[in-house]
Length: 315
Length: 177
Image (cartoon, rainbow over all chains, first blue to last red):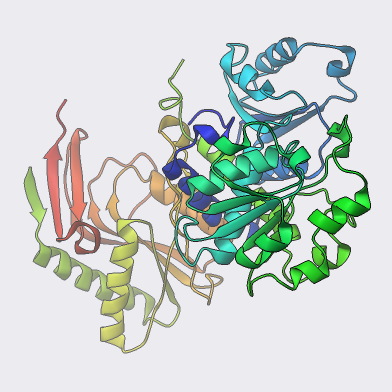
């Protein structure tokens, strides 16, 4: 594997091997010395052309724990804000000798474009491209689910997962539907019809408009953020109505199966898609998702970078 | 292909190594056995069992994966990371015995010493290998050796263990080149 652009590129075996690697790497994060020499001398560039807190910090922590050198590059304060093209930026990074670029961009397909062209020779990791995909988030979600409910198995077969909310704008939902179904889980999408993308019937997931009918049957409720910054239209009448039909509050949580967990990729709109009570409850694994994110991203960087030029097709 | 050690030879060698470990460390009380996956880990489990029958007490045993500390990561496709299990007693102030199947360049052991350094500071670190085939690239020497096998560099030493391969055997193969 050379790049991580989309979950659609992964085989089941590859996905499981990333999760297994993350399990071993998680032990490092628990140890006294949180540092490994594995990627010493490698340079990883975090190219964030869109705002992000946890993904960027998480990739940075992951790279540093593997002893790689990290260069942070955000749109604000760089030449990207002066209108420099992605190509010129990539060629600059190549000239500086970047071994990998972690890219977050508001345009769907930006990571693919960076990887497909011969602008740079390093690996490309998609850290979220527009409304397309966010593979590292899906992998950390699958890791978290497996840790809590996996019953020792390698995959997630037999589990039911509901993904609830703004599916239309959510790259997290897209990556998660692909990955969770690849790993054998049954995925239900719950959203108002206006927040479901065209062609949803071809996704490997069931669709429901009724949260209350779905919630007692699932092992995982994954809430999505209502992405107001991407909303150019009126998708629901008002926040209160959305919250009443598609928000997760204490009353709805009470109908969940015993042992079922609540997830959210963050940042949360407390009071809109998830109530503060639920976010801070014992069922919530939201902060654990952040912790696991570092281990999973270490695993991604390990798989892409630790191997030699042999597999990457030596050039 | 020629067989260098039969199942019985392996069993005798492990028994002797167990006795030597006990003799050198004056008993099992301060010993931690750490096997290097995959085959070293199985050898560690066997030595641990033998020591237990000799001494009547359990000896702390674990595994130490060294993949993340290798210096040849860039030369090969990525390797799977194997579990590291350190006994709850830890390694601080202990006499750690590293156990591997074949001692060759010494680079695995160098990586293992780095890996140990991240975990703690043992009193001593010793090394047991089922086979020492020579061709060291680093100043590393085994304290306990099952058998010294003089080999040429283009031969391969193959260790089979019942736990994974169904039978015990060490053989030397000529590399087809």
